[in-house]
Image (cartoon, rainbow, N blue to C red):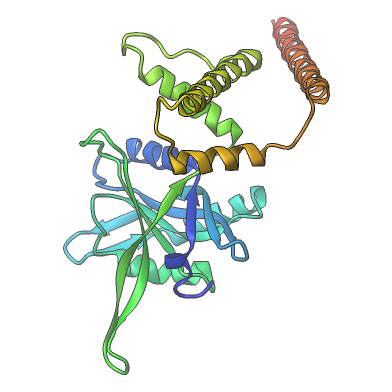
Length: 287
């Protein structure tokens, strides 16, 4: 990764990273004004993007007068080694901190994480976890060298575009959280719905979206609505991305996947019941 790679490439981030930062901020010591830590993820150099997938906090001590910060380097090294054992594909991408603006200690942290990142240039994620504006403000920076050639040089932290991304499992959890956030605060947050209920909800959502698309197409054909080129291209891309499968093969494929899911649910319930019975039997033997 070259020095300007992060300025020109796409940076993706998993929502788990933000949840970990918020959790660390809520659990911070009473005398601490911010939390900071290491960003981990993958660098897809050939594809031209970086994905931030994980993070961990680093113990530190701030010196506001001098703008200096002391890191517990032995702790950071131990946690990084443990993480590498669990997720060997992840690498150090930079650091995160909470606050409204880049701190005075950013230069010192940049020097440290430049060594940790190796050839890559470290990223700096700034999260405003106070939620005073009812929004979680996130900004990503990358240091750019500036100055006169042959003279004094310095670093300027320039903002980098950041996009949120999530897999299927994260999407289910995020939708559940969004659903409960719109309910009255007096109502307790329920548990995650069973898999079949999620399939029904997803199918209902797809049906509503298809009805909306069909209504738009019929209105355009009936000259009740002016056609939009952007919508037309989006519909074309969506339809061409779907493989051509006849209805009978699709039905067989869907039913096969449904049977596999039902078998997985049954096996998981049997294992859970067996563990509960074993736990009760072991407690009876102890008495």
